[in-house]
Image 1 (cartoon, rainbow, N blue to C red):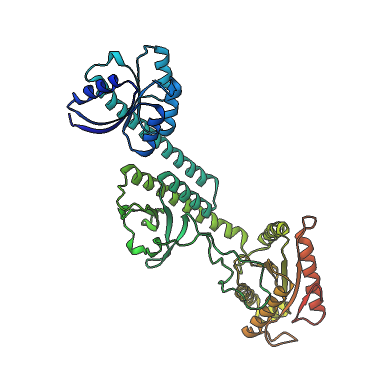
Image 2: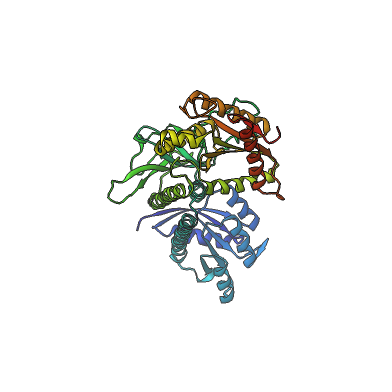
Length: 478
């Protein structure tokens, strides 16, 4: 039998018992024990706090600790160390209680034989190890079940991914966990990380025409997390099957689609400061299983996004339809009412669009509507803005967190964009190119009112713009 080298703490106040245990342990060839002795409970606790031990041998009757209370006190400072109780009392009931309280064994001193104590130590170590492995397996299965349940209950990919990295970091006791997404064979970025970095939040909206350079109304950060050092040097070309190097464990995330080759979506990255850490097989297997669940979540989210787009986007122009406009207005109204922030709405109407259709035909009319929608998207500079088809040749721009001055600047910019576009309209009686009549309104939402109030005000302003001769902007307060 191979020798085991163990660091043992003996808490015993009787010197004769200490000497006996030393002899019994030294007589066993399959075990090499380094024994440290404490004669009181407080001394034993002090040694546990300052040292590292494999096993604790505990006498239940010490000068400063008696019975099961002594065992409970030691366990507080050694929850993961096997404890073997030694006592001179032959009490079956006390032995059962000691085992129920977490002792690995209960030995009566006067009945100890040569190999009994050594075998009890080895068996206790194996039992403790098996308990720990079972506990880890249970925790692993619970974590996986929580993540799978999250995937089933939510289609919010950002929340699923953030929950995943938070849970994995806590479970594997890692310093950083991140999910990296490959946008192309040469580009990618870290979407979520734990601990996550806070992103700057867009404040109350512009008061001039100089606004942040976001693109076409899309959020600049679709998922609220930042690339974190030192993991931000990754590129898709460096991603390989699961590997561990310098304290970093990486596992690829593959997307599987029917009748298509597997596509590399990204990878899960786990990093620890301890560069020589040996990753256990079950940890790698756990992350592989997790990556397959994340791939399912991604696919579900993409399908939901497609369905959501078809249900809420205007089929002709590709911007939001009236159904989604009403939903968005209601959501933003409630949100801004809580924070007492400004809410602006612009309604615009293509001037003499009936004449445009009569002159150029309905197919060209459809193309005209598409061009108008694209111009509206160019006007938007923030992900919180929304361009929508209000109905027929009417369009809407929804501007959360935008005061009256900011709304005025957007309307001016919209007019400028249309003037530069010079879309021909020879049937117009005011200009030889396409023009817009624009009405706008700004409010601070109130829980006692509804978005209909904002729509009515913008609609009244639009009516005034048309009545005043078209090709102009009128604010509700003008």
